[in-house]
Length: 243
Image (cartoon, rainbow, N blue to C red):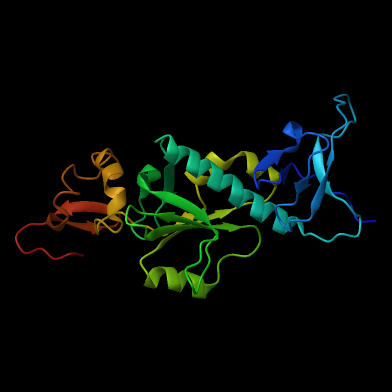
């Protein structure tokens, strides 16, 4: 017998994610992964051995992969989080270890104008797209449960100067840890130094931290005066070339 999965989130008829503990009997809910009807299972019991409130598919034969549910729900939860932060002008911090300059970077993504899930770029449809003030996609977020983005997708993003944040998820626990998963993603292919700016929108956030981590205080204003070597920055002398 196929083990019943205890889905924590379901979609209401307006397409809004609802936690099972906040759901009401007699209301229709749907699976975020396959859009099939969900059954709310909420006994009200809280004692030992009782199950937590959850959603389940309405037939034992219904096949919906846990991967589809988890992947789609995490996308929706992340979009909700980002939209709320942008609307309220609250910080969206991202910290990562750069694979290019080998330094620790951090930026604030609050300056983006919008966020959409599964936005079509004709050849590609990233899980989440972030837009600049001109309506251009400059950062995408790919959510990984088992399968990383195809090489063709990464090459497409690079060709179009779109930076990629990758976030690996493993269980429903991640659905309630969105801020931390964004703050410390699995990878971010943006190197903010020494070529500045790769993404002009991110520069204001960098201005606040340019004296930290051994970065010269005037590096952002005068990047051509410096060269990098082994993750450190040195002022050029005369005609010193970039190492």
